[in-house]
Length: 120
Image (cartoon, rainbow, N blue to C red; front, side, top):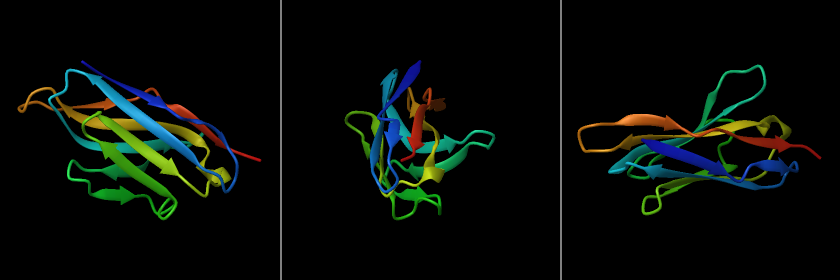
């Protein structure tokens, strides 16, 4: 079994910055893709940013140029640096990882979610 624990959410000001982190622990051989999603009240969960095992990144149009996703394979972590925050970034942010406990298996895991609120 694998657990993902997120940290770093909270209150940010418009134009400010926040940094989210997500650490995986448990039965891990290697981690393939990692990503961050977010879900605002009354809306569906949407992809914010993703990073492959080779470091190739993808961003939602709404966060391009403001958010940066990165990973530390040695620590099994994924980070999301959020700059130039806007009120519309307010949501619960979830990390997800595709984890291989062995080379033949893979499973998707989700964190518990961390609240990000952008307000003055």
